[in-house]
Length: 575
Image (tube, rainbow, N blue to C red; front, side, top):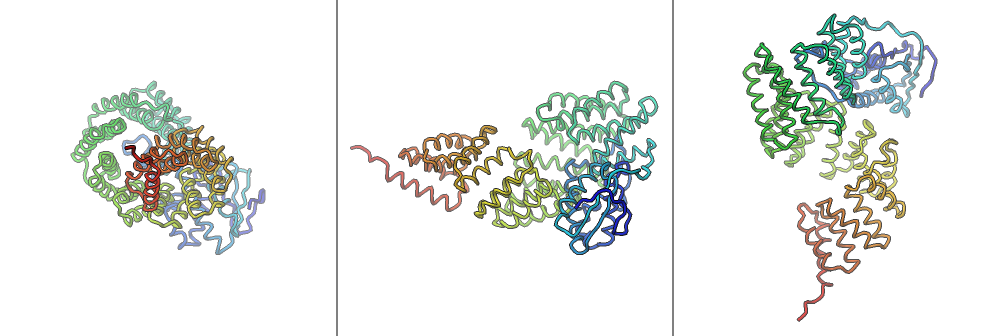
């Protein structure tokens, strides 16, 4: 419930000030801290997201331009934090009604606005009232001396609050110039570029690094700028604008400049990490063995200048790179050993548990995979990929209810998660719940409703409901948008077969068979060919489908029955 303009809170607590000048999660962070003190047991179940939003103590991280790198979170992480925090508040509201007042909601930081919106949606069915008020004078903002802005920038980058980082970096760049304090100006500039890239504005970040090269030839700064420029070309620009050749040129430039660093330890560490960019490009270009040599060489070099406990996250990152290369090369035992080491070096990184779970899953170690997914979810917090991957594992092992619950959670965190929405709709279909399946598809965000995969799924649902004309139209729209979608060809063929047009079904299935090695398109084409009494071609399809590995018993039985039918109708050889 939203009620505007009232200034006093019936709860007896003063309103929480959400003004962006007070930082990320202003207002909502203080509210959550108060609620956590009132409900310590429930807070303990949400400690990961609460600590991320309102850490008890958060040491100032290394400045943005320092050599010591920090772990950068994806921008979408804040949506997961908001989901977890809203779950905590809802659990508290069930036992004790809440009435909370927030002021300056109209001037909130993006993190605060996102969390308030999530709270409003989640608390709608609970005995809680959120009162959002606009206007008025904000509380005094934090001091904005350049040194303080630099610390604020580093904190925002380390915690993944990129909109606030952009505002802070722009304020810092307005306060200093390359002439008055080059090092500080560089910190603000590279921090701004990092935040812009994380928010999908890599083109602006490129312009900033070009500006850096135009105003200074400082070796340390130009070396770091060269590497950062390379990563923009390799990773952060939109796919159509990425340029591996340009990325490689900038990496070679960074390595050349790093070779001139006089301090051996810093020279080795910088060079090793720049070489990892080369390894990334080599791997993408199909030279995983060459990339593996670079990673192994880098680890050996680091061991000569770093102790076992120094820069543990960075050493873990190299081992993680090596694990991924072992996976690409089919060296699963080596990959698993590396991931075990990675997690020992950096046990708080959820990404590593997701990767190890995939290896356990591929090897049939279901319990171990589920443990790793659970660890990733606890550390994430509420990482959609971990829930989604665990859902697919639940489905594979016959735990349909658990799979549906995980997929619902994915969509609560990220409504635009297309794969989760399609998977949940298909699970509803498998249970025969056509109404739930259709509701799942139609509740997608407006910008996703014309996605080919959703149109395909909705077409299948409408065909199951007997609306064959509508289903044909939906599937045709999906294929117009994505002619490579094998499922849409298969489903439209089924619709056209049901409408009595076996020839059209065969034509669609010809496309599906080219796109998919699965047995189902061949089985379906054989069925349509038998309708047309093309027994020899149908037998060929059924024979090929029987050779596909991993068939379930029912499909194998149907294939053999179809083959027997074809043989019964085959013309007798002439004598």
